[in-house]
Amino acid sequence: MRFHPHTAQDRKDMLAKIGVDSVDTLYSSVPADCPQGTKLNLPSGKTEAECGKIFEAFANDNHAASDGPFFLGAGCYYHHVPATVDYIIQRSEFLTSYTPYQPEVSQGTLQVIFEYQSMIAALTGQEIANASMYDGATALAEAALMAKRVTGRDNIVVNGSLHPHYNDVLATYLKHIGGEIEANTSEQTAAIVVQYPNFNGEIPDLAAAKKQAEAAGALLIVVVNEIVALGLLPAPSQADIVVGEAQSIGNAMMFGGPHLGFLACAKKQVRSMPGRVCGATIDADGKRAFVLTLSTREQHIRREKATSNICTNQGLCATAFTTHMALLGETGFKKLALLNHSKSQQLAAKLEAAGLKVLNKTYFNEFIVEVKNAAQVIEKAAQNKIIAGLAIEADKLLVCATEMTSEEDMDKLTASLRGI
Image (tube, rainbow, N blue to C red):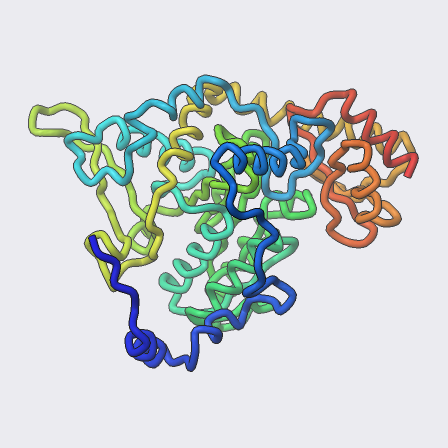
């Protein structure tokens, strides 16, 4: 296949079509302090073996969660993934498959997707779930667009503490599609967004949020950053749409991705839902079979009438989630949630006994500790190979404990914070 680069006239025509003067205009949103056009400090003229050693040296500079005490959460969580999960997803039937366009040869993949949807629906207290999203942040943005379609309104109210990355992605979607994030409800409010637990770790009152949404004639969107919390907290069944991040089950942190976004809602809104849905039916021989019942993305059937441009269902991540959940079962999932909460309670007790102040009244597995200089605390703790958490304000440190957090880890963090 020959490569035919765009001509100068091709570029001019394309820029004119989208209404900009130059390619540089397309990068105007990139912060000025980000390197642009500068030569990267990388060696040239190296052999493959030499390049391997160079990049191995780069990799050795990383400090993984397993390398020492780790208390960072904030949307990406350190959990144990059973070896069975990796074994299953590495099988060629799952590892190489993409969207199952031919159901007659994709029954295994379709069944996994169906079971994934069923699990998400059960966890969230909703009637239906789609075949997964990119990640939690884009799932929220897609839910906002869904709310716009359902209500015919444009704006979104964020109630309480929402993950800042989610907020940024939501604002970006609205900026280019229409609408804005508003502080208070109005006649143009399509939905109210509540994170559960919120970014500070607190457990919000969903019943109150539902009343506020109903009074405004808006939908309630509940965001779940840490899906393990749903093993202990009541399912957000009062929500109209539930979205979030399912990375915690079956998926390692992997330097921030790929992750597994999810979206669930009431059955009556299924045709406004983005992505696709796998359904169960009966084949010509009367046997149970699985098919894609709704495929609403733009390059598959719907084209310009699509409800979203989600172009993958994160199938491998969803398979990992489904495998891990099947191994845990309902009882195991609840026990995992209880273990996470008890670990965080143990950590909070140790920190308070050392004279530190925990600011949360409620929490699941992460909470805020008051410190004098959060950024400095994190830096000094890192010198002792302790990842102390996330600085969310100058004097607030967000810390997280999971089933992977040992008592020794807690003691090391406590001693470090007390010393600092």
